[in-house]
Every structure is written in structure tokens, then in C-alpha cells.
Image 1 (cartoon, helix red, strand yellow):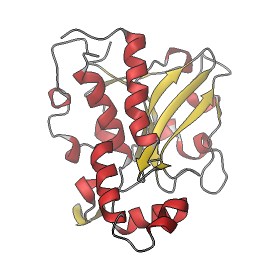
Image 2: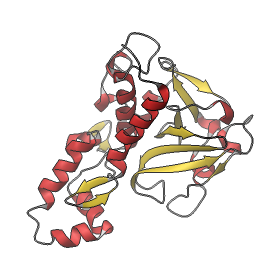
Image 3: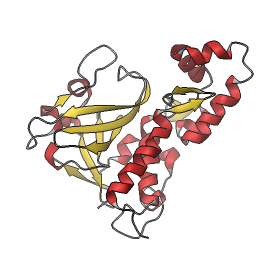
Amino acid sequence: MVMDNKLDLQKKTQIFVDGFLNMDILGQSFNCPYWSNKMKNGRVVLRGFLDGKGDSKSIKHQLENLILPEINKDQILSNPLLFYKFAKKNRIGIDCSGFVYRILDFLISRGFVKRRINKITGVFKDGIRKTNASALTSNEFNVKVNTAGKVQFADMIRFNGGQHIALIIDKSADILTYVHSSKQLSEKYGVHKASIRITDPSKGLEFQIWQEKTGKGDNFGQKYFRPEIGDGIFRLKAFP
């Protein structure tokens, strides 16, 4: 398999992610909502559309098909709060691990690997529905990146002891941009971008300046990035 030029691949990945960031729903743009199946004692007790792991086109089409017959569809489409309530009521969206898994799958399918793998199941054999944030960042599949200066495109950030995950989508001289899907952790709902300003590239992310806030206005990194319980930056061993 021949990998695209790395710069071209990054641009294509941005376009792929934009399908979740700017979802055209009947002429109105929304970022993809958040949904995570509800679990109890290790079993799913409330299941969402495609288990909260769907691709952007399927999620978009499902939302449009459900909104179209609604009498108050114009109100739903003109008010983001009503739209996200509608999506939640119908259990439609994507969770954090499903979103990152989709990006990793996109990259692997385009040759962003060091060995002969053309599908993500060549790494995560259990598939998208049985792969969570903790598994995506496990030592079995990853190497840990210890300093902000060594972070690369497609590295993953593990939060909250492996309960949440984001992916680095861009890196400039002093800014890291990551994407994730969040419900209550962040002030922004669903799929969105956020950034970290690098002030000391020789240190970990906990020493940098996080621009994102939590839903309660706290600093996102200080609240949820906790290296003492295993959080950090992770890079798939299969990636260049």
C-alpha cells in the first residue's frame, strides 16, 4: 500500500473530520452530537443509533430522516439547543472512542502505517463496537510520548484514567490542535476542536496552557488530564 504524501494526508484527514464538525442537516450546519450507550453491570441497557460509533454520513442521514416529518422541524433546525435535545432523545451521535477510532481507520486505510495493514482491525481485532478509550491507548498497541515537543499528528491524548480520548489533528510551532467528542466534560457539546499552547516543549502536556474549558468553566487540562493515573500522549506502534 502506498501512503499519500503526509501533508496531503493531513489535509484529507481534516476534510474527513470536517464531516463531523460541520454536519449539514437539511441546510443547517451542526457539529455531530454526542451519544454513548448506557451501561449497567457491564451490559448495554440503552443502545443508540449504531451504538454511538457511526460514520458521519450515516448519522447525518438518520437525523435528517427523523427531523423531516417533525411538525416543528424549522424550530429544531434554527435552535442548536433544540437540535441537540432532539438528537439525544433519539439516541443519535458519536462517543469519544468511536470518533477517534473512525479517524484512525481513515488513516490506516490510506497507508499511514509502518507495516502491511490496510484495515484498522489489523490492530484492534475486536472492532469499533468493542474498542473503548482505554483500549485505544493501551500499552499493547502504543508507545508513550513524554514531552509536548515530540507530539505528532495522529497522536492520541488519554484523559480521566482512560475514560476519555482525543486525537491530535494539527501541530504548529507552539500550538497543538486536538479533536474529540464530549458530553459533559467540555463546555462544547459533541465533536469539536480545541487547542493547547506549548510553552515548554521539554515537558508534558500538564505543564502547557490548555485553551479549552470544562462545562463549569474550569481549565480542561487541569481537570481531566491526569498523568498520575495513567493519562498521557500515545502513538500507535503501527504508525510512522
